[in-house]
Image (cartoon, rainbow, N blue to C red):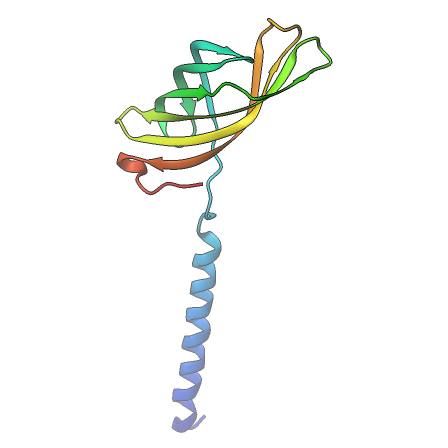
Length: 142
């Protein structure tokens, strides 16, 4: 190989090497979103007719020891369920506070249903959208 071919060949190899390095780094990066769950045990008063509040200790992924709060507005749309109770569309808001005081706030919408008759235990199955955060969670969204 003559010297006039060395520089162009070196340039091509450098571009290929940089491209491979970039591709490896991109594939190793985490996804833009991070799925996480919060499991909590708390106290409060929620009814399918009036909404209500619940709060307590939470076990959340990626946050550590924390507490949660949830407020559901009085539902507006009701329908009887096959178990003798009712289901209602509920909206609300809540948040989680980490041990260091940092918080994540969210809005929620979902179904609030009796397990059996009208005065039986309630189940809430909702979707949560993060609306903001403080401390180490400033700028969170999703």
